[in-house]
Image (cartoon, rainbow, N blue to C red; front, side, top):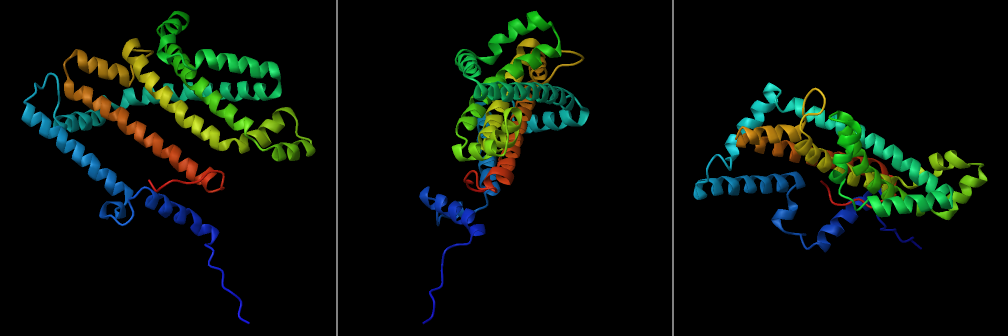
Length: 294
């Protein structure tokens, strides 16, 4: 008697099947738009936004002192990067953001590790996050200026504070959802203290850690730009926020828009980086379901 042939999809095909099912659930299956590559759809939408922008400039006849046309912004953007006027402030802002994120992430890991190690640590972390997580990060800028003066350390402190609390909440959630069986295996292998955190908690909580990094950098990115707008120059030269404020002072409206475009481009690029990291780690390892292709 011939045996029945299984039609169950292979593991390698399940992510593609899931993505197609998600597309059908959204009601986009079969439409010409949904069959286009994701990058082409988003490029078309971006082109439509630019066209609407240009149409508004032409029809509304707005003053160039308050609004810039897309072509003028493109020229200012290209000249700013070619001449270094935008590259220098951008690198300064990214350096301060990276330093603040590293400090905030390290403190978040230490605080959450202490929280799972003792009831006192958990109470301290719960109290601090309840008080400081809802606090707007820029609100601590006056204290940072008082403590650190007109230096880059003040901006790093503000960014670290912005990153620390959402990261701590996300990592804490990941630590609390580690399966009890996994913890039991680790303890049976003799893992205690920091080794248990390093070998069991951190790998198991990786999806929450990456989600926390995505949230933390978004908080930090907004905070550093806002702080630079208020703070001005820190150290040898200013960052993107100072560049935008300086362009506004001299009524260089295309320059203001070029700075805003730079902020948006970096934001999209970093979001794509985190999405790629997710897909190469937690999605590939089966720790999280992947979404539609970017």
